Image (cartoon, rainbow, N blue to C red; front, side, top):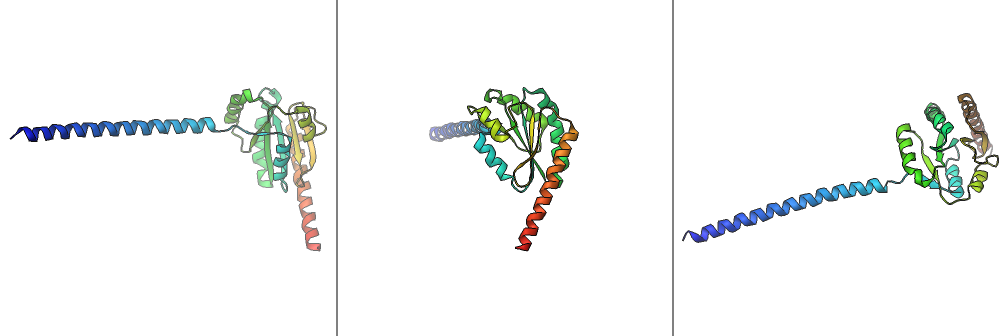
Length: 202
């Protein structure tokens, strides 16, 4: 009479153990899946968006209506690395006045880790892009600025109408940057005022 309840008890214990083991496996799989998802997200986190000349022109056009400073840099370019913190400071200083800043890295895709490390240390408050591999670099340089032949660094200053107002090629002092920034801010404000006047006149 006592054997039946013992079998039921043993079976119940066995079933309970199996249930606990199954739950543990589910938790382990869930934890593993979580790690996998995080790893996939980390590995799929793209670096700076890659630009060819057409993409660059679209990017500049997207800032139409704002004073825009675009700086071209690379991790292998020592003057670029030296002036980048200054550009970052200028971006913060003049942002309240309406200045937009964009960086374009000319690093090779194989140096993407270096680009990530550089940007992680610099903590820029502005977007950065990467030159698309396999493009005609000379055509890219000329398309960006006809006076540019690839010398680094280069910074281009666009007025609100999207046209180049000034550019700096090679290492330049902060005063040259600030003069150019003030120029496009004033020029842009003047152009904006003219367009408003024209609109009222119409």
